[in-house]
Length: 218
Image (cartoon, rainbow, N blue to C red; front, side):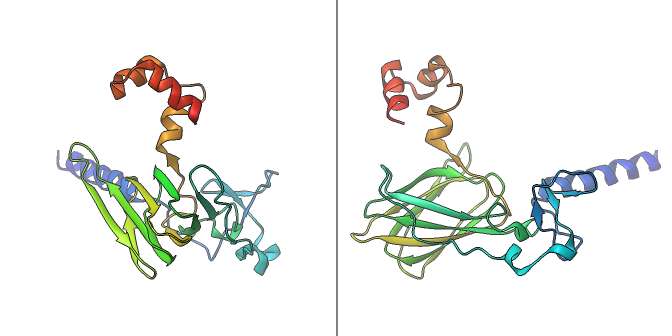
């Protein structure tokens, strides 16, 4: 009986550690990602590792973090710097993105399923916020100015809106090499294949013509 209890405790402990581990700590200096799939490659956390003897400084460098195109309907542009841009980020549990905003530009409500985000405003004035999970759905908002910093907890819906009259720029750090992004409007109204209109009309309590209009707009 005592042995069974010890086994159960050990199982629960291991289960808990698995739940709270997002990007695991690496057991080597680096694992530069490559798309190589030939026999003999080492597959680590979704990527194959480059032979360390062939690694160079360029594997840890990205020179393309420039102003994004904000001429689209949302007036914002997100330029990610994650493992796909810097192969050396593989297994290191960190990434970032540059976000450019035209006046009144919006980075729409979205979530990062695998990472917490910390945002620093470089230029402009942003209204930012996030919503807690059910059932409270509590909204936390703040107007940020140049030099201000704000945190969006992992998995929670959040947004940024340029409330100034000039362009705005922010840098977001993320606690994952590939935090992922789910834009709420796209996921709900632009899925492939589309979510049934019957589901959406009942979920949002609106006429099907409104759902169709939103889907057409997106």
